[in-house]
Length: 446
Image 1: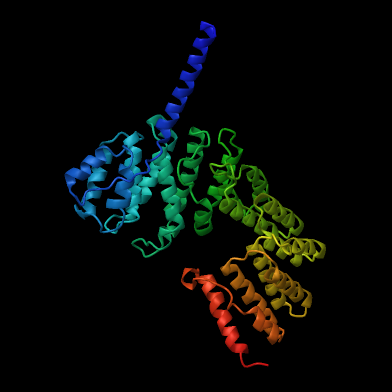
Image 2 (image 1 turned 135 degrees about the vertical axis):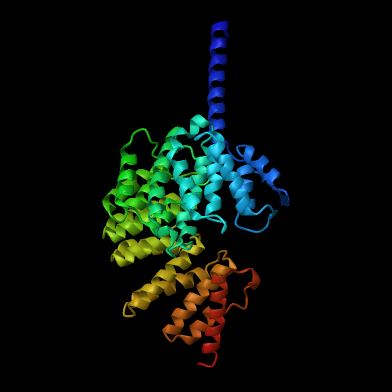
């Protein structure tokens, strides 16, 4: 390699390392180990932590420990500690690195400690979000990202039962809508500063919007974000926008679903995160159903099946409700195979049973459920105890409803199963209890 090319290579490596270093300083991922506060926290100890609050783990320790709303830390009263925090904050330049961390803790404490007014929380988060555009320049985007997640979670949860001096829920306070709007604007700014990277948990915009609603001003701000080419259109940003648009602008929300689908988040192994994708597809299908777009809903349900390998029961329900007999027969054919996912088989039987119970004249549904469950229980395949118990319950119930007592006894027979009942979740325990009740019900019948 010539000296020229060698120097060029070293320069490129140095530039990349510098870029990584700058991003790392701005994002500051928190350490895995949690800092523990002293058992007896006094004013001097707290002040030391406040003065170094931008060091890894200190803000989290103060939030979860001293200002966590629990009486686990004895010593300095929380009201006095909060006064120290405010005094430290007043000395700190606005939008400095420590200022962001101090405001983060101030907002957290105000909605969790009874000795602190919620007014402090509204003020802290509002002031912090107003300055979020300066976070990267201050050397931190992690602190405002953390604060934003805390605030959105509070709107979804705590503000629903915390009450102001007038007795009204804080979620209904007009300040909640105002700070939530600032939070969205800050969210877009932070994404822009980090090129779409979000450190830690994403804000639950859907949960907050479902409970607090979206004002016209908020909806307009979301639309402005969507048309701003400088803001990275991440999956979670689009998901948040969908939550805002779905009630008043359903067609716009459906457009956003289409844009978000290729961006479904993946884990470290580059596999789509199933829980997130399931919620996404289910919400998409639900909106299409609300808009009476049945064909499109079935198409999306098939996309879910192709993407995740699950969702047969949900697809079957759509097909049956839309009178797509050919599609339903094909889905049942897949579920009738010996390698069909066991949970999907039982889920499909539940769909068939529920629809038959609504229209008991449609004996085809009952016959399909019976055939599906009997085939599942008779097949030479592995069956987990919880799923077999549910399958036997659903088949036994159906047979009893059709006055087929002899067949029902055989279906409800669990004497050959080996299981630890104490290890079952509440649903399986319910099925097991119901099986025993049904067995007692038909014990004396011919």
